[in-house]
Image 1: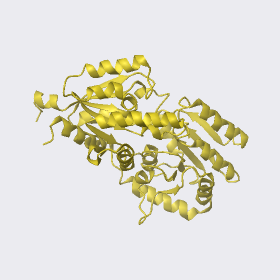
Image 2: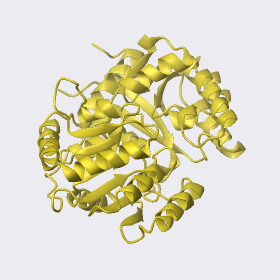
Image 3: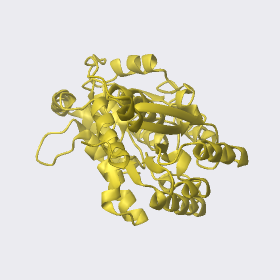
Image 4: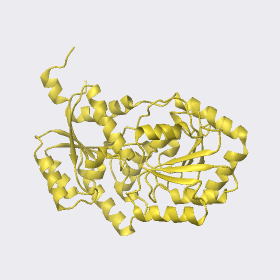
Length: 369
């Protein structure tokens, strides 16, 4: 039965996203999440009006601020608006004045002040701006239970205003890998937050072992850190074993995963860890720093076998020790692969993510039955 025009109008959302959402040169988990939501909501009956706003978010120039202000001002009263937190959280002077007439939902991928490498004073300023925006919003959506708890504690938000819609995963064919051990892959923008410098240090400590490793991810977000990683690779004589591939298309990344034996995620901060579930969707075990929502995405349960090894964050010796265990214990590798295959069958798809988010939108639009 087709929905009436009135019902279709009520189930309508304006989604404000960064302009680079489709830029293959700067892919990110946040952009991928936004894109899947914009595709998924219409499939469950929502009319999506996507608006991509250009700017160096979360610190835009005057022109970008003015563009966002015009975009929000042009929306009708009581419109439901889903704003990517990267756009909204740094500009409360633009967003908050609209909160009285619009139903604003802010989607937070990672709290602004948590990005590693920022000058402490600048990080504190961003956190204060984010706090002002989130307190004015009608609702907040976080991408993991950990992120929701973090926002509630850090910004003094009421817990019932912060909702969770974890990323989905696309089930893929099991990765054949290579010999079951030696091919390592690290996926993420080359930034201090993602910790590739830590991984290079750990790999240098196990240079006697037979591995190769690709660091796949954008090189434009933090050129200074890219130089740090390159110099570390050269200093340790790993130039023929560690490769910086730059950003990868979906097809290229699928090829990378197919040839991978172990995903390594040495992040210093991670709200969820979409690459963890991308790997598990292919039955690939994971070695990761136990930060943020990573244990949740891994399916960590002290009472059950898990498809990966968790190590303390920002700890090169622990990372190197875990790599030695991976190579030195065939039984461990076999157990991790079995657990990865089991976890693969429990991952939810993006439709579940869209339905979780739609539930929040329905509360605000008054369309929940």
